[in-house]
Amino acid sequence: MLLIVLLLCSMNGFSQNSDRSDRDRIAQLDEFWTEVSRTIGEGDFEGYAGTFHEQATLVSGVSEVAYPIARALAGWKKDFDDTKSGIRKSSVAFRFNRRLGDPTTAYESGIFHYSFKLNGEKQGYYIHFDGLLVNEGTWKMMMEYQKSRASKEEWDALE
Image (tube, rainbow, N blue to C red; front, side):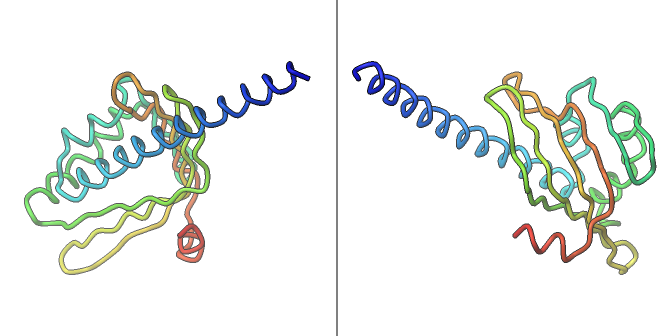
């Protein structure tokens, strides 16, 4: 009987520690995504690039390609420069349907909404995405998988 009580107490303690660890990880990752949003909104290319691990990969299900994030960043740099100079107004927001991990690794899944205004015309899109992140003192994206287009209805359902 004593063994059962100790086992239950042990499991309860583990569960509480695990819950606290999950809350801490989610709070840190919320800060990560806020920083990603800030860098895009301000056109802070260096800050945005700094959210990725140096060996990160971009996978695009929309375009059916995969390549190093450095190549993707090179292709996005003009949009950042245009945002920074005021030619373009950009923003991104994230909503999640799955957030798994531990203090060193995270898998985040959901939808992002990227929007921009260029020459007075507002445009944007919703994308189902997965992110694989590692924490090496700070969270860094190892892989961004832009899976497929999403609808506004799917976005709204994640509120």
